[in-house]
Length: 346
Image 1 (cartoon, rainbow, N blue to C red):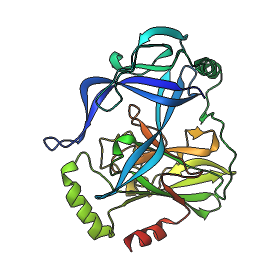
Image 2 (tube, helix red, strand yellow):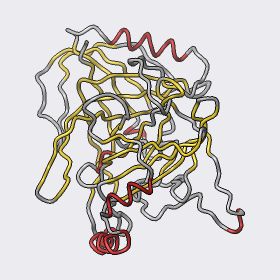
Image 3 (cartoon, one colour):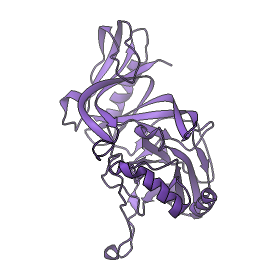
Image 4 (tube, helix red, strand yellow):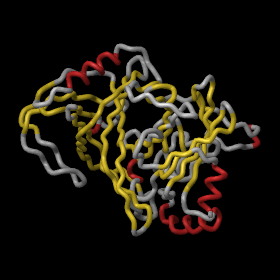
C-alpha cells in the first residue's frame, strides 16, 4: 500500500487552567501538522460538498491510574468539507514543516500533492489541506479518481469504505468519536450494547474519568463528590438506539444531548424531560453511517461527554472507537447500565 501523507494548518490550542478560565483555548498562533500512513475516504454530503475523512493509526499511552500507563493502538480521524477537487501538482525540494509535537524536518524531496480548500472557514490562513505522496509512490492517482467519482454521485449519509463482512446479535455496530485532546485521562474504556426490546437497544459508554473545562478548577472536588454520590470516579453515559426493520434509524439522548456545544463546555444536558415538553424526549434521526446503515456514528462533543450524531469539533482530531474486530483498545460487551453501575460501584 502506498504511503499517503496529510498536512493541514490549524490554530495552536492549549489545554490548561489560566485565571479560572476554560483549560482548553485556541490561540492566534498557527501550526502545520503532518501525518503519515494515512487512508482517505469521502462521501457526498450535499449537491455541492464532499466530506473527506482522513485516518491515521497511531499508538497512544492512556493513563489508567497515577502510576500506570497502557499503550494502545487506535485510529485517529479528521474530516473536512470541500467543493472542488483540484488537479495533482508536483513540487520539488519539499520539506516537512515540524512543530513542537511532531517529527523533525525531512530531507528535501519531490512530492505529488492534492491541495484542497476547506469550505465554511472564516480564517483563510487555515483552510488548506494537502493529501500527498513522495514522487516515488503511486497511490495519489487512485485518490484523485475516487474523489472525482464521488463528486459526481448523489448525496449520501453513508461513508463508503469496504471492510470485512461481520455479524453479531445486535445487527449494528456503533462507532464513537472523541476529541483526541482527552487522551491523557478522559478516555473511553468500555462500550456495551444491551437489548431492551426487539427494536430498542441501550448503549452505555464507560469513560475513565470526566475532566471539567469551563470549571476546571473544580476537578478535584468533582471527583470527590462523584465518589460520595455514585461510589465511583468513572463517568457513565447511556443513550438508546431505535431499530426499524433491522436498521438503526434514531438516537435517544435523554439528558446528554450536546446540541451545538463543543469540547469547551462541561454543563451540557440537552433533551431532558421537562413539564413544558410533557416529558417527551426527541428521537433524533441518525445522520451519518460508516460503510452501511449497520454502523451509526456518534460524537462525544463536550467535556462532560454530551453526545450527538454530528461533530461539533471539526478542527480537532478524533479517536475513532470501533466496536468490532480483535485487539480493540476498549472493552466491548452487552451489559445493561444497571449492571455496569453495580459492578463499578462494588
